[in-house]
Image (tube, rainbow over all chains, first blue to last red; front, side, top):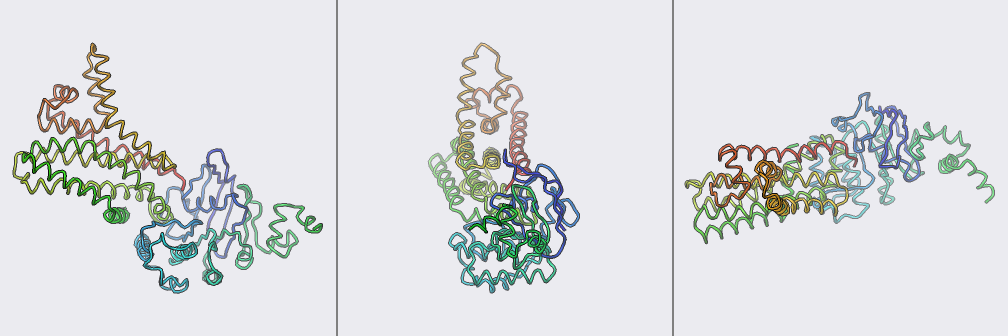
Length: 241
Length: 260
């Protein structure tokens, strides 16, 4: 479904992505892991065409995306930091996005799920962080897109909303969608991911199934397996302490 | 693109700026017409206001709008829309709504005073055209600067300096050059130099149309001598159109390679 070929991206002198080669097949949830500043967001943004790589090609459903825009109809993208036109009301924003995509989607279902009804008439600048994130999720998930890209979807969510989001993600997975998830919350990844990509300093250090990562590192917990990828002597440190 | 244009227009027409701008022109024009009760004199007085104010408002609101709509742009960029359409739509929305405020604010009083049946109708139309062109040119320049400059304060500063340069400093340097190089024939230089300033171009255009040689100034006189009134005006209009296209081409080109 998605293929990255020799992607290089640097911002000024800072090299963010170094020769990324990646193929993500259709179906299932792939988690994109890595420490802060490892290039997860840049990678995802380059798929959306928000960031333009200096070298390499990206293919979505077999077609190169460079200079294209219509393929974004098939992607639901949740940005990491929810930035909205602050003067709009929530329902106006929903209408606007529906209008721009010329699709209705299913806002009512998600409004009910995230209990957004009391906020529909509020201006976006007056919303709390968690509510903004719910609006953000609503805008991403209300359209029926074959690919869903979620960049830190859990930020600011209360436990109830978190459970609902996890249920929603598993539902989408069952419906045969492809999901790409960036997250630092390992429990969420462990629960939902089929495949794991581990990015470090702009390079892919691991790409395979969640099981194989755990087996390879001889760990039962993802957190520990990741720590071992980062620091091979992690096991020893743990023994000593 | 039309959707973005509609949203930008809608958003801007709700803002206080559009009303303030409209009311300013309405009141000024009414006052000038009331006191002079001479359409031709009012046009000349308004010309001086339009030549300074339209570029200033275009620059300021152009920069302000493009920096304030960053969030909106980021949201839109993830949607199935062409990049070009987002920025072009926003630009046309802004320049269009400003031009509308200007045209209505200045137009309504003139219509009340019966400009449409007077001999001044084409002079008025020229003034209207110049104001609209200046709005488009300077808001386009501000958009271009905002696209190139990430930092809001610097972007604003650059835009305002550009306005200051073209509205005031340019003429000063021009005059200084004429005085310093008095002994040389500078007609060609003066002609070329006025083509590089849209405000000068608009001034010459209106002057040529009004046919007031006393107010033409050096460049205007040279222009008239060189090209004659009709051909001079033709050149002015063409150059103004080229000026309006330049920043649009500039910001559309740089938006293609920008990272968000």
